[in-house]
Image 1 (tube, rainbow, N blue to C red):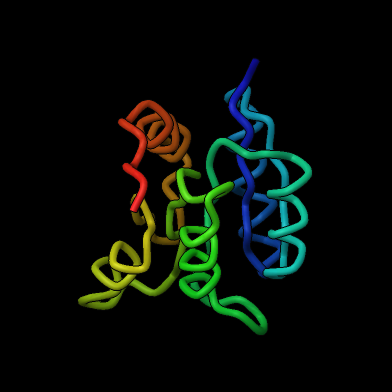
Image 2: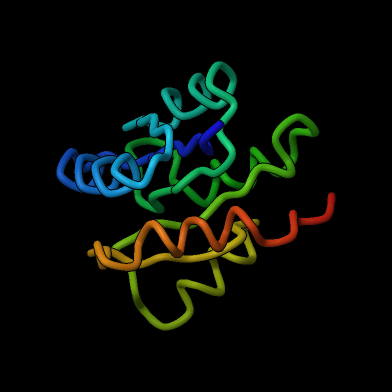
Length: 128
């Protein structure tokens, strides 16, 4: 069974590209463009990894990540910050919020799926 990936991003072009690249590598890809859609999809699709955009409409991705980490049912979910914000300190903020990793946009289509595979094969985060 292929890994299930949830791409949470409000930019349709980013979603299409990520979904296409991951889909061609055999991942089962689901998408969400709002925090509410993300929570619904997490509950129904049970993804193995979430690519979390930091800037989302309403609740930002870091706040959503903290909420997922506080819930015993989702606290061990692999969450990777997926953002165009590549300023000094942004990666540290994402990791402090509970993200397991950080990928900046635009993605490198040649290495993107391999990076996702690395996150999936890494040891799971310990419960807080």
